[in-house]
Image 1 (cartoon, rainbow over the protein chains, first blue to last red):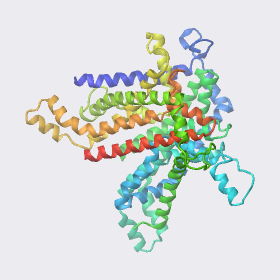
Image 2: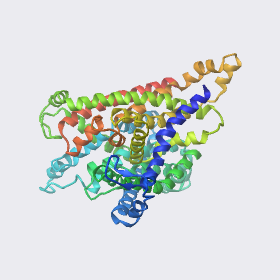
Image 3: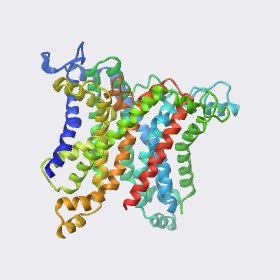
Image 4: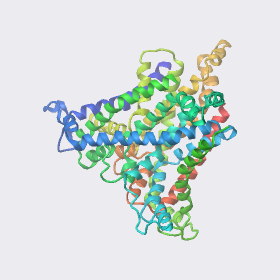
Length: 278
Length: 262
């Protein structure tokens, strides 16, 4: 019985996590072919295909998609931190309101992110709310094109990922000793200086964890760039979908997945180290 | 004492998170066919929704997939979390932990692509699963859910030491009886919360479902996604409002369950 309880989930995960990942690796070295499924594996006679991975390194379209994704993910994570640091600390110090406020931050996470993106589409459209406000203020009579821009995409990403960033900062902030900051102020530090020199350094591991918790999933994001971003925001998630579903080029899509994983492996390991230390 | 700027930032952040959602809900009750324009109170979009067979079918399919995937995830993830927290060192423990943790950190597009390749290869090798559809989406969601349930259960058990179980065995309970009367009740809140977590993840997933479903397996999020691609309609507002109400209910339930467990 005890052995069975180890074996059954182990086999499940081996079959549906480990083996699939290995297949992505094999597919990245396969050849695109006519037929169903549309590829021929390295053992079908043609040997391994180094072209897919070489293409990623040499073709600026693919290279840029990886670079853009990392940049957008980093920007998203940085913007999330900017909001999450004060939010996490304020919630930790909210006394009896703590749980209610934490719930208010987490509830949107449970409401489904598609819905929230839908809300942003409604707000940012040419006839949307934000344009109505701008027109109402008399700043311009031409609608600003806000939707399908990099800005809209970033707003949507920050909106979707902000709760992930607040959680670790809140958890770390509850362990802070507010007396330390008080002592610094009593000794003559301005509140700003006390915050920067006393509070922030104590939050560093949580800051790193929060950054990575946003950065890692954001790097592969597909839905938000597709629904809010401009057509030229060809992030790797979008390119991968395109290669797979439109071009039916499974090997190149797999090579993109491998490249994304290679780029993320460092952040993932760092994140797991931070988790173990906490 | 909380500095004023901290509190201001908190309210700004909450407004940023909630305002779009609140507007979405408010305008679900607007009669105007242009989304986010007020045309008087009306429930017409809810009744339009009730007549949209394609969406209702997708919603029903999604609920069944989510319930099935969450149940499988609780069984598999519960076992994984318990084994990792309580079995001590055994051969393959590190591998099991790594495999259970992997879906949590892998980008969705990678997980989705890898699962599809696995299903295609499996079908070629043993003829099962035949084609892609609801079953393959369920298997994909169950795998992701397993990882989440395993983490929740493992951390819950890790925060309670073994004394209780050992005491039960010292007092003459068989290992099975000790598990059923002591360990399982300890795990129960985590299992329930894990079920709801897996259920919600499944109901919110576009990427895994896009990869692993065929033309016959359009789930609600996939249908919603293709609607949103064409822009917003008030019908989406109404649908979102219903989903929000369901999510709020689920969260309240989880909160209740976790509190009772402590």
